Amino acid sequence: MNTSSESLFARAEVRIPGGVNSPVRAFKSVGGTPVFIERGKGARIYSSEGQEFIDFCGSWGPLILGHAHPAIVEAIQQAAASGTTFGACTEREVELAERLYQRVPYLEQVRLVNSGTEATMTAIRLVRGFTGRKKILKFDGGYHGHADCLLVSAGSGLLTGGIASSSGIPEGVTADILVAPYNDLEALALLMDRYGHEVAAIIVEPVAGNMGLVPPEDGFLQGLRKLTADKGALLIFDEVITGFRLGPTTYGVLCGITPDLTCLGKIIGGGIPIGAVGGRTEIMKLLAPLGPVYQAGTLSGNPVAVAAGLSTLKVLIDENPYADMARQGKRVGDELKKRMLGNGHKVSCANLGGMFTIFFSERGARNLADAKRCDTRMYARFFHGMLERGIYLPPSQFEVCFISAAHTDEEIECFLKAVDEVLFTRDSL
Ligand SMILES: Cc1ncc(COP(=O)(O)O)c(C=O)c1O
Picture (tube, protein in one colour):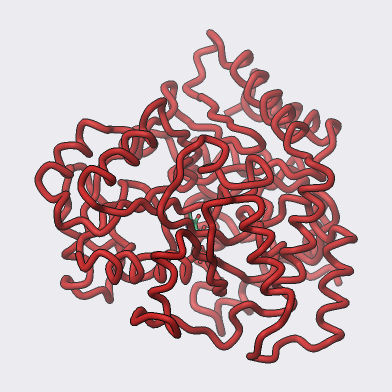
């Protein structure tokens, strides 16, 4: 086709607000024109102008097997050929629920929805229905989709009393949202001392991925489990990013902590829209039609999404590519740390499994306040330097880079070579 991204974006801006269907795609925080993608294969994507990039964004997480994996494409084609939606029960939905239970024994029941946002929104309604309490505690810098009550930013205080980070959200909707700094059990204990008896649930990304990658410190998640149990509140793990990302299961299983509810999305749909909320039957049975907590969806449990998800899980379980992704992630982390030592660059790298973030600050981040100290203008220059060298990163400092099972060692070397050129040569940033 060879149509420039500039001309496509100019067209897009006329008929689509901001030219995008999800804001971060607009490159606002790095500047420039978004690259229009025509196709992808493995770890590579190709722009409308025919440029080739090694992709470390992976559609923000779902593409753990890379682009257009043959088994997933076949599963999608077969499912679509048999009918794309019935709005009626299908066996594969049951299979996916069973498969999730098999890998995550505390997902006694799951309800499939269409996005991560729907999963967290449903989880919030469920915990409020179950406990009869209103307050929800979330963490500063935790993103749980764009449902009204969860779009709250914390500012710097322990408690915001619910200042919405979007207009169009009435005060009443966020008044019951408490916000605490991530990785800070002391602050959390203070909040729970005061409000714990009113808190329906704490919702947390067990590994934070929306302020850059910020892993939980030792004891943090255990502390959450204990504080919630002590106060009769529930614990929701939002594993929309981490579910099946760091092992063929949830992070809760990997770290040995059982939340009351878990939200999933991204990977379990193999690149087709999906979400899921699951947990103990005692809680899940409150959902309609069994119970009084209403939730529904025309396309929920969609046959194509479920087929793509099942097929993705099958490959992940059969081939178990996690050790390889973790080895490559460690190589990226180790090499970057080695290069950063003593060269005066204010850069650090967080990595876990196949996830990593390069922070433009010396200290890295243990919470949002740290992450916000990063030099985002430097990140923007880094991003464009990498893009010019054929490396596609998330267009924001506050996101995670993903290594997929399709990334080869050579592609990781290309990434490191580009980093060297952009960051560590004499004329670099
Ligand atoms: C942790 C987390 N929860 C929820 C969501 C919302 O998912 P979706 O974009 O599918 O609505 C996201 C999206 O990135 C996420 O990272």
